[in-house]
Length: 141
Image (tube, rainbow, N blue to C red):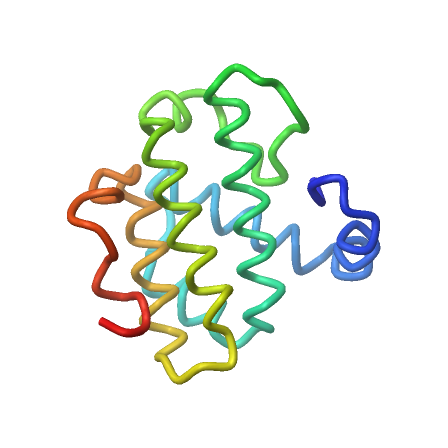
């Protein structure tokens, strides 16, 4: 779940309650049981570096599973119906958006707005991801 990164695994173990909560939120978003705006408001109060790294690992694992590469079970325990409705190519576009945000940490951007955009995309099955380049919620737009 830590992407074969021992230090990330230690960090995740120390924050097990937090990662379990993030997993529940991500699953609830995918199932339509949670509001992306409310989840973004809660996540914006957390350490953004940790949240984006965790989300990046979840999307990487989802992409591996969607491509049939196996790999570790997702921490968010997303069932196959969620992965089947998401185009694997869009997972890579989504991962690129997450990584762009990670590369701009410490910059001047609205954290909650950026998280809202990411989580709205996830809650809609990434139907808008990969269309027209960089989404409006990324810094520099």
